[in-house]
Amino acid sequence: MPSALLEAVTAYIDRRGGGQGLFPTPMPGVNIIRSFQEVMPHRKIYQPSLCIVLQGAKQILFGTETLDYGVMECLVVSIALPGTGRIVKASETEPFVGLTVDLDVAVVRDMVERLESLPHAPASGGPCAFVAQIDGPFAECIQRLVRMADNPKAVPILYPTVMHDICYWLLSGPHGAEICKLSLPASNTERVAKAIHLLRENIAQPMRVEQLAEAAGMSPSSFHQHFKALTSMTPLQYQKQLRLLEARRLMVANAASVADASYKVGYESASQFSREYSRMFGIAPKRDVLNQHRLYRSLTGRDMPTSPVSPMGPAAAPA
Image: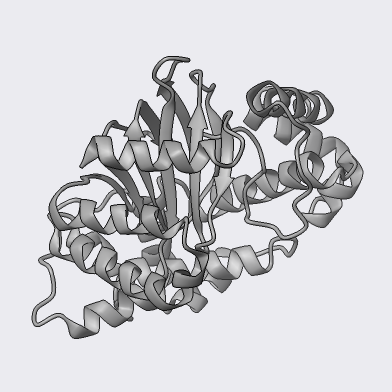
């Protein structure tokens, strides 16, 4: 199964010109990544998704928690989290090859409603991310996704079924309770997710913890405690990272000026924005944008495309 999956993905890439970088598929939210070298740490917002490794290895840092995953393993993120990821194993002879698959909360909720009994809650209350094995029926689902990439006409009919199957096997696995919590109306995860949605939808607006707690249906103290447990940061730290990451995307992918980007994400002072940007990324905004474009060209051999619709993460090198 691992070699068959890798061969199928490699063939898909080669039929589209080969090389390295991000290779979209006809399936919404499913992308293939290949890299011939290790990639430096790259910070972005990780959406609810699966990040699957078929060859090579990756590492991700959420707050103070580091997760490593390799061949036939995947990172599962069940709530939008700022994180720093990097490819730690890749070469010309054995490139990193992986897939990313977005998770649809509505599909998860539908599968939870069909389960006879819910998964038992785990003892851990840490960040909503874990590493899972790709084996058995779960691996067969991924193989079906890969086969579907070459059959666009089959996508509208078969893709929803495969995603339901993937969610079922995730819910049936050892970390099923983490996925389950995302869809339960009364769970702390779902409540915090509502507050995160409010932050993302109003990225340029000032938000008090009391407003976010009200949206989550929790007291301010309880909300603050659960938010930090699930994201490894306070609500205000999360908002700052969210704003700076979106500003970076605007500058890198949309050619926005520093002043323009800072204003669009809610900063009144471009100098304050530059200070906080440099503190987070370790480099001034303009220089960082140039470096991101150079890195993209070195990895893909082409200029970075524009990205008019914000994914709340910068278009950049695969990581």
